[in-house]
Length: 173
Image (cartoon, rainbow, N blue to C red):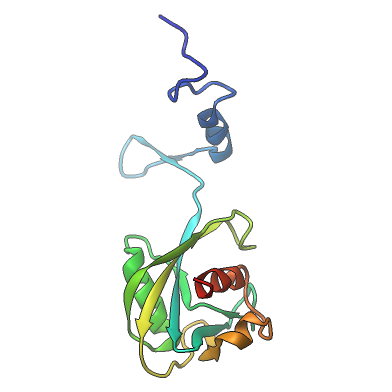
């Protein structure tokens, strides 16, 4: 049979991107109790969602009640539960952390830099959300409130992780 081409997308030799990815993923074999077959589990990033809510010249932020970045301000959000649609998760997290019900306007951003969170590799989907009412901190949010955009962008508040980058990109549109 012919040798696989090093330029073919199907080539998985030592110099191919697929070969490089495979080495990084390092699959783990887990014996299934229910059946005789093996299950392959991959090291994948965790998935989170963030809600970007604007009211006039103000932006909604929550104060983190837990590490990492305890006490810093961030967009409301959190982890997507297994079997949950990210669109449902962002509305759930918004309500849990602020008491506000919202409506998704559109997808705003996605962040996935492997080192963006000290806990693990986390990919976050950011949605633009419309919500009304006065927020109240709940769940793992110590506080929730609307802040003047100028004050936030001037760096007068401690902002968690890469949320300042998200805020600057969004609010400069």
